[in-house]
Length: 119
Image (cartoon, rainbow, N blue to C red; front, side, top):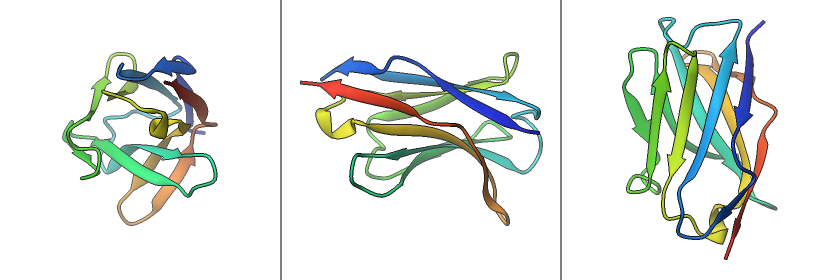
């Protein structure tokens, strides 16, 4: 059974960099075919795909976040990390790490972690 667990600070000050790590167990992040995503949900709004890092190490980002986002990985720890710079209160959301495969969709989700950006 694949499990994903987000970790990181729950409170970030505006203009700083938000950093979250997803630890994966029960499956390797370098297994062919899998994408490892960050998705967030602001209060009262829908889910927003932020970006992903793929089994081969390449990444893709939402155009709306392109200038502020970076997703990296540590294969020795089976973890991948989100960094979002220059945050504002509009970045307040529940952040999820999620596994996907292109013809399957999103299949395993972390429990989500609340991040609040203070002004």
